[in-house]
Amino acid sequence: MKIIRKAVIPVAGLGTRFLPATKAIPKEMLTIVDRPTIQYIVEEAVASGIEQIILVTSAGKSAIENHFDYDFQLDTILKERNKVLLREELRHISNLIDVTSVRQKEPLGLGHAILMARNVVGDEPFFVLLGDDLVLSKIACCKQMINLYEQVGSSIVAVRRVPEQETHQYGIVEGEESEFERAHRITRMIEKPAPGTSNSDMAIIGRYLLMPEIFDLLEKTTPGHGGEIQLTDALQAMSKRQGMFAYEFEGSRYDAGDKLGYLKAVVDFALMHQQLGPAFREYLESVCKQLPEE
Ligand code: G1P
Image (cartoon, rainbow, N blue to C red; front, side, top):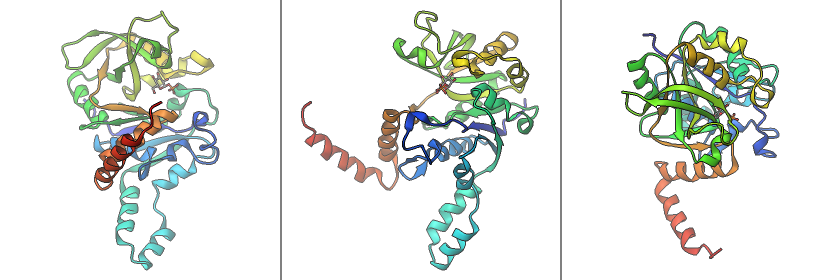
């Protein structure tokens, strides 16, 4: 069984849900407590043993590449000013992992974005992590998926249960119970189903462990929901050819591309923060006591 070494992170999206904040700054660079959201995603990949990140970018996203790069000028200034801890922190970010980028020249959809990484991924299984989906968990979500992969040896998508009225916002997976813990054998996948067209409540969240055969299928995928080339449609075709699993990961998921989801992530990540957590909890408790009745 091939080990998973590479992870693709599509970051070419415009971030329209977060305008005007994202007019000049990529949404992936919005800060949660003390680091940009993209760093949490990359750290999850690193914690799962991934060795190379492939960013799928578009114009105006160079801030993300710069964030993971080494900045000689800044390092020299910090050295002169004797800022030892800050220097270490910045070095830690640039040493985290090897980051490569490829371009998506036209916004043709998530499936098309993943296809752009084909040459860099090559013929090996890989992860896709979506930057809007942050997961807070004891064991990194991708690591949990690798643990299942070591038993099943096939593609896996991470899912969580959502209320019926929200299923149309996600890729939905239909499946059967399996002998593996928290895992379902996939029977059908539908991107953003219209109400009443699927009775499943298992929604895909942005973590996919994929076999390289997905690239051939993406080549053949025609525009689907919203006129875009959908990853879910290629996955549906793949589930017909080879076994695939949906995995109910352990942990909390935040939609950091949505204003309310982002605020929830800021609060929960701040509460979990080693240095800031206790003082922030005290502050929140004092705020709650003073909250006026609605
Ligand atoms: C994408 C996928 C969808 C998945 C979702 C998870 O949709 O197409 O299948 O459920 O991410 O966040 P998007 O949110 O980009 O519209």
